[in-house]
Length: 66
Image 1 (cartoon, helix red, strand yellow):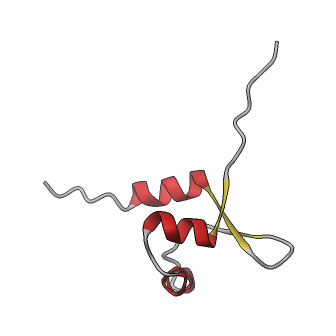
Image 2 (image 1 turned 45 degrees about the vertical axis):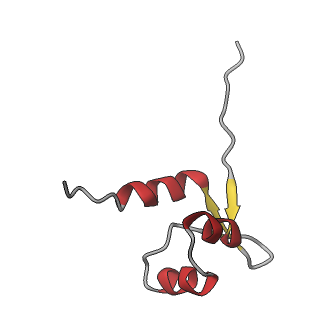
């Protein structure tokens, strides 16, 4: 029986910034303050953000006001 495993989509900082419509400097400012989505540093020094981490980050920021 074959099980299906969902592959994690990894986004670059540029892709995340474009999706949430912020500047790169804002992303790094939020990251320094602990406000950005969780990221992983890759061997070349770049950052990647998983789709799951970005979605969870968005969900945690939902406004419950009516």
